[in-house]
Image (cartoon, rainbow, N blue to C red; front, side):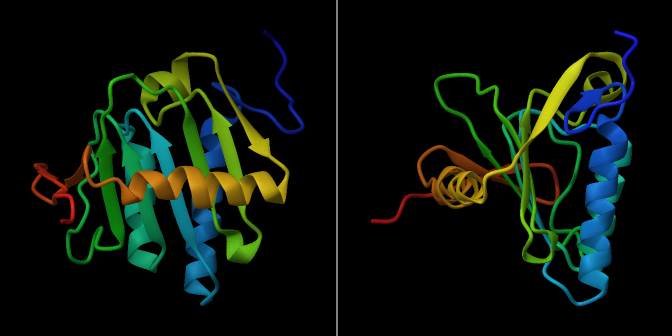
Length: 174
């Protein structure tokens, strides 16, 4: 398509990278100003260098970053002075999941996007991918508090990515 201007849709390779980078930077600005700042991403893969560097910057600014990455993750969480505010959890179940969720706390004015794009160069630069905003506050709260939090509470299939690149299986409580 030759269309280059979209009102709400984030389309790769047109505007998706620029918009996600801007949203991460906004969370950094909120944290630096002492405002509420949190990022939660759910995706299959995180390998894009620029996005990883921005997430490191967010962590260094004090943004709490929670990542649910099912597959490849080139970011290393828990490194002092670099990524100590980042947590990466992988939950692998029976079926490959295709949902991607991008949540930004935005000082209490939550924004959440759903779509098809992983944070990989091929998804951001070379393929057509679509991400769209969820506009209903009720739906945003449901996705954040019920859907995403369920992954963080998983104690049977979840694995936590360590700073050395290894995964540690979460053990269920008694």
